[in-house]
Image (cartoon, rainbow, N blue to C red; front, side, top):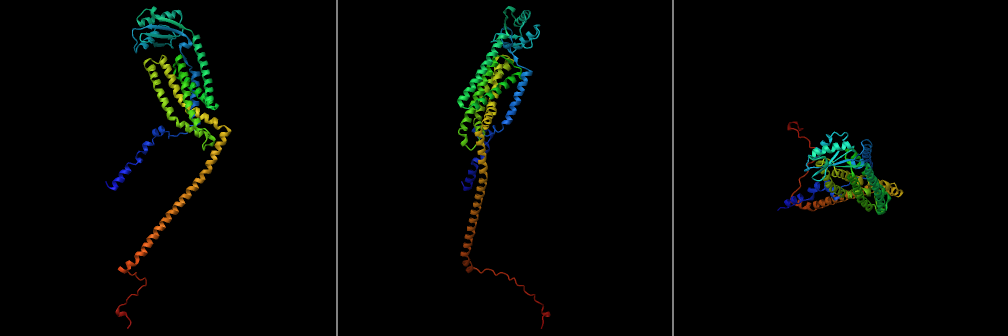
Length: 414
């Protein structure tokens, strides 16, 4: 193989050929080289969150929540069936609608196992209960006596609501104390609680917009997403604490260190969210696609899906920027930020002067090398000159004197 072939092959195998692939967005995101100013654009995230919160609050006051029978009370009928199929729920919904009982818009039909159906309606009178039992028995092909009936009062739903609110308040208080003690920073506790409140309001607002029935399963899902959102926030805050240790002796501000922490855990947050969403999405598809959107699977799946997405969003776009804003408001952090700015302003001119000096020295070195090469060529010419004179005579240069023109012989003076 010739030297030219070796050179060509070596140039073809250089890593410059794979540079576009190795520096792609996915690669930089996976290796942590991707950097985005999450903290610096906090006004943008605050605006987006404010719009989401406004929509959620308006939906709550205008549409309201579709409370289930467990909260408002009502009548429950359980009818036996030979086998549950995909047409069971539509058939019994139609049977309840054709029973002749008025105001049954909020009727819910769910299956219990493989051989029974549960129909939930508003509170019915004695005559309406008899009519409904006969209609459901006719649809099931059995007698009215085999259709079980029970009445749920609204007091039980109020008890569930009160207990859920008490559990929520206790949870938030314990969360604030835990973060304060663990990180020894009350601003982190405040930022985490604001993020949790954001997740709660957005989740409840979406429930109001979609119109899903709020059941005890919904409360379980909401309390579950609070724990998930808190976990994601604590992971980000732990990295922020690591990067901002002894921040006054670093050549960057608190916001810059916190933003670097968010970028460093961004891949972990995305992977954790995606892995957690997959089984929840399966629950939601099963509850909506196969059970008609009614039952605990749909309620639990929707609450978990919304909460996981908003929890991942709030930990990155709400909690961390808010923490940085609170810390930057401290006098010590303001002084440190001013010192960092002055240091950068002093460093920039020096770098420019140093660059110009280096350029000048490089130009001087190049001129010296050129002069040395010219001198060497001149010396070589002086050494080879006499030898060439002995071999050949240099051609004479033409005279610059003008010669007079020669006249004809007849015009010459004699």
